[in-house]
Amino acid sequence: MIKLTKLEEEVIYSIVLKEVPDPDYARTVLSRLEVKDRVFSKDISDQNKCCGFYLNFRENTLLKDIELSSFQLAIQFEHGDSPTGGAFILFLSPQKGINFLEGTFYDATFPIEKICSDRHGFYLK
Image (cartoon, rainbow, N blue to C red; front, top):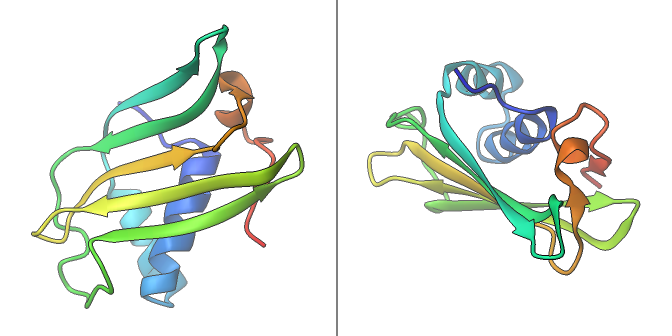
C-alpha cells in the first residue's frame, strides 16, 4: 500500500477543509483515501528532481455527501526556495470521488526525496 506523503496530506486536508470547514470530516476523508500510484514529472537534467507530480487514487465516492463548488479544487502553497511556490489541484469524478491530485511547481524543481519528506518546505499562507 502506498502512503500519502506529509505534503500530500497537508494539501488534501487544506482543500477539503475549504469545501467543508470541519477538521474531523477532512481527517476522515484522508484516512479513507487509497493511493493507486504516484508519478513524478522529473527534471530532464536531473532525474532526482521534479517539477511536479500526479497522485492517483483508487475509485471512491468520499465526497458524495457534500455540495461541491467545482469538480476541480485548487490551492496554492508557498515555498521559501521558490517565488512561485506550488499549485495543487484535486480532480474529482462525477460520482464525487477523488480521482487524482496534481502538484506543479511552475518553473522550479525540487529534489523528489525532499518533497516526499516531512520537511518538504511548502506551507499555506
